[in-house]
Amino acid sequence: MRKHICICLASILMFFLIAGCSTNANNGTANAGFKATPEPAETTSRIPVAESSPAKGGSTNKILVAYFSHSGNTRQIAKYIHEDVGGDIYEITPVNPYPENYDAVVARFRQERAVDARPALTAKVENMEAYNVIFVGFPNWGSDMPKPVYTFLEQYDFSGKTIIPFCTHGGGGFGNSIQHLTELAPKATILDGFETSGSNVGNQKHAVDNWLHNIGMFSLTRT
Image (cartoon, rainbow, N blue to C red; front, side, top):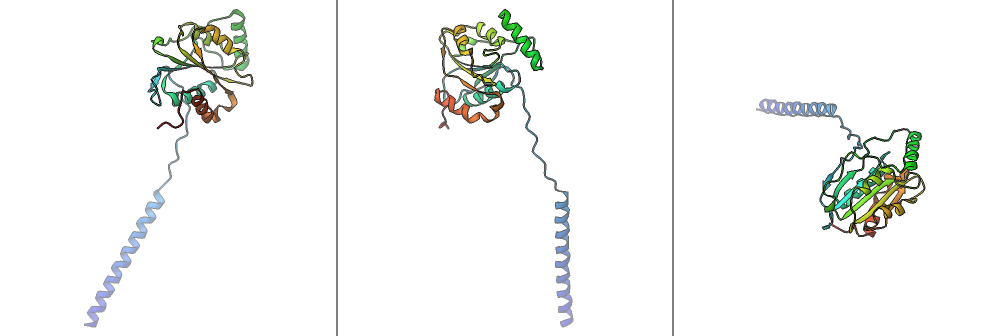
């Protein structure tokens, strides 16, 4: 009898030993095969023309965020604004793109300014009459707006509309651009604009939020 009991106990003990070894082996295999997948790097994509989203905060305004950008700084501020207020977004793009080289851009701008040029644009905004709030963004070039922005502003009637300027610069703020903007849209209401150094656009999201809140375009307490 004792012999049978000993044999049974030995069998049970052997079963647990084999099961334990099997579990450890499986865990070892699983851990050895696991590799953390890194998050994909964030990429900067070009905002397409006429990208649309609903107006935020229950606003009844029909909003357009229009901007010209060469290096991408003004485009970044336009993205911040569009994220906050919704509406449609439109990039002011000349048919003849500006060169990448800085000196070449300066030379072309000076030539365009000397003749008061109006560079042709690749597209027009459809149904501009439907918008009652238009953000207009641009870099400060020579204390003024780039000439494609002049083309944009002269293509439409802004009477009775609200224009909200925003600008990136290398230290000159808006320069003379607000005066010229007012001359080009004399029957529009022009609100206080937003300007920032081009080298600091990546840190300006909160500043943009506050500016939009201050001019009544964005509620920081909305749900």
